[in-house]
Image 1 (cartoon, rainbow, N blue to C red):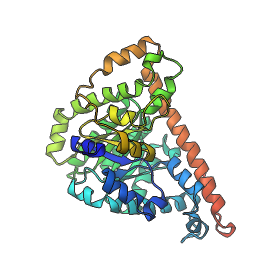
Image 2: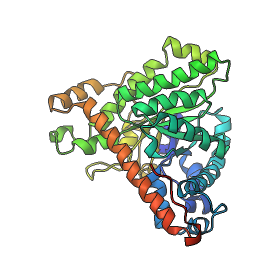
Image 3: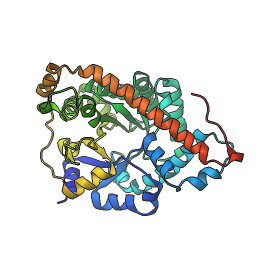
Image 4: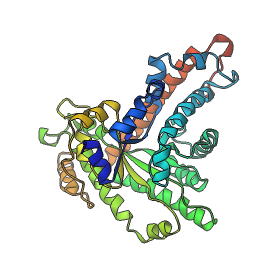
Length: 365
């Protein structure tokens, strides 16, 4: 059995953290689905920036848009939705057979809305309606204002991928928001089958502390935080409130491992994939990580439901002077800032590729 099949048999979904128009047109994404057990994908502003900037695949649609009055932002979203709905169709069979648990693709709202709960909800509802796609998540960052928006979006019936979560505490805040949205739907007599995933970013932890900890602790913090979060995730699945919601028709908010590509030459390409094999989770990975794991990876161990050795490892980091809570907040702020920078560059590229007669500036932030 292939390594990717073993993860799937364990109960972990493998998603691709990438999308390009080329991989849709030349059959690459369909091949990953068929050969490597890929059952979904995620996108973000950085991924679309690279695809639109470094290829000509979008040039004609940008230069001569169907509606020249669209802003640069609206034009981009129309292109992204076109790609993502095409990708979603490739995963429609698994989406249906899993009864909506798997087979999702994701589209992120503008990162400039991270501190604007009302604007985020409005954007999420608009993009969800515009796409009209049953297996499209709208990505909302798990910032303080994002958490408020998650509850409202779930109540409004919008499937949500909570992004930019870095710690157990940030995950719990997002999970509580999901529950509150569902509880409000139950009180209103609405269907509770509104999907949600919570994305924990892993490798950025290790990059952040690489020069601040002893050699023996390098490249261990991200996995430790993920294990700690997994323990909280499994514990919540037996909580009385969740059991009530589940009985009423809700599905679990699955935990998703993001940022699982290695950033250190000291690690094997499949390091985070192998370390985070866990039932009832998702691992979304860059293309290079997927291919490396499929070729040389192995199912070495499986995460324990209680998080295993997470607490002793985190205690070692605390002893080394790492304030995990403060670092989680910093990483989240930096994640928002990074996506905002990518977003601004993306809008500039879209504007530059438009014909002069159809130039339409993006609205101010």
